[in-house]
Length: 222
Ligand SMILES: [Zn+2]
Image: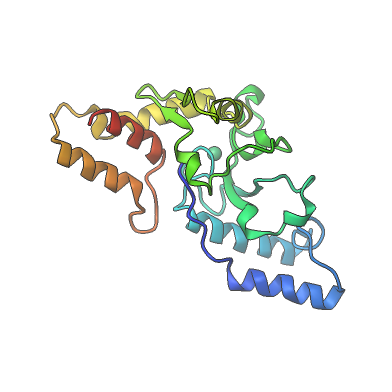
């Protein structure tokens, strides 16, 4: 998981919530207020997705697959069904990929698989810890980092977000194989550190898909 560096909420989003409250004398909620079935609701959702996708450097908040405004959905980290007071709190809103749809149910992943699952100690992609509780291997597999207090929740997150799905393992392996990790060249420590630097930061506003998986493998080469 790559840590999401949350920015200030977009001005239009905060304005909309404030205006709603003035007009209706209550706080707006995601369902039925923000996300309505009409054109306005669709436009608001699209605009918010656009903000979130850009903020995340165009990768999924959970699996780091490339996403766009059209190939993502608004994900409530704390499920809106249970946390109504946070259903329009920008900190709780992320952009998730759409997984594998309904083709192979067992292989579903990310927001659609997570659905309403939550645990009090689960770790948000906005938390720097999210980069420290998983370990990616050169074959595309993902493990929880053992021997930490977070090992158990990390393992459960892998399962409940489907991060060990066949598609994700395969795609991560391909991304790692296409990186410097599998080059024949013997890189110096300095060169390896510069590759890590490259995968750590956005380039022209985007991250390389599965960047954190590549970084984990590069770090093993130091
Ligand atoms: Zn995803």
